[in-house]
Image (cartoon, rainbow, N blue to C red; front, side):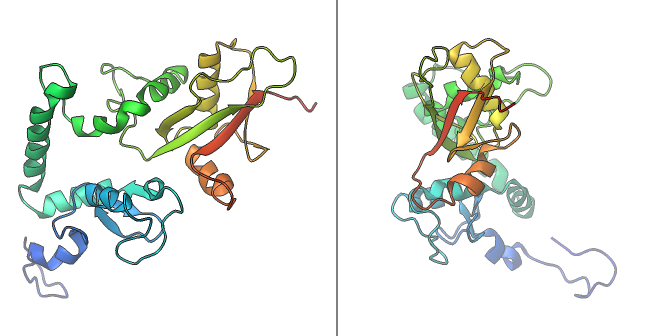
Length: 259
C-alpha cells in the first residue's frame, strides 16, 4: 500500500502492512484480528473467539489484568465492525479466506443441526441463538419490527450481531390481580439495545393483555422510562449495586397511576 502522491511529512514513503501489525493483530493468538472484539472496561481488542475462550477460565483482561466483570465478563464485550473493515482492506484476501473457513465449518457440521441445502450467508452468527431466539422474535413481533427474511429493510439476523444481555422478568403481582401473572419462561436473552417499551410489548404479548393495559417495569424498585435501553439500565442502575448478581432482574406490575 503506497502513500498519496505529493510530499507528506513522510515524503510519500510506501507503507507495508507489517507497519500496522501491532494495531491489527491479536494479543492472544498472534494472528490478524478476526471479528475484533473490544473489552469495554479497558478497550483492549482481541479476536472474538480468542477472548471468549479466555473468559471461560478468567474474568481478567489478558493484556492488562484488570477485572472485567465479577461474574460474567462476556457482557462487557463489544464487536468493532469498523476495525474489522479496516483490517480486511489492509490485508488482501483475508475476508475471502475467513468466509471460506466459515463455509467449510458449516459444511462439516450442518448435518448435525440443519437440513440439507444452501448454507445461508452469515450463518456463523446463528450458532448461539438457541436460548434466546424465541424471546427475541416475540419481542420484535410485539414491537412491529420485521422478523422475516423478506421485505425492505428487514433485519436478517434479528439483531443477533448486537451485544446481548440476559434478563430475568419477575412479576410484582398485587393481591387480587389476576391479569398480570408470572411468565412460564421468565429468563430471556436479547439485544442490549432493546428498550423498556419493547419489553412492555413483549410482556403484553406473552400475558395476552389487552392493548389498553399499561405496565410498569422496574429495576431496583425504580420505574424505568419507556425509551431506556437494557444496556443503559444495566450500566446505570443494576451494575452499580455491588450485591446484584447476573442476570439483571427487571420487575413488572400493573401500572400505578399516582394521579
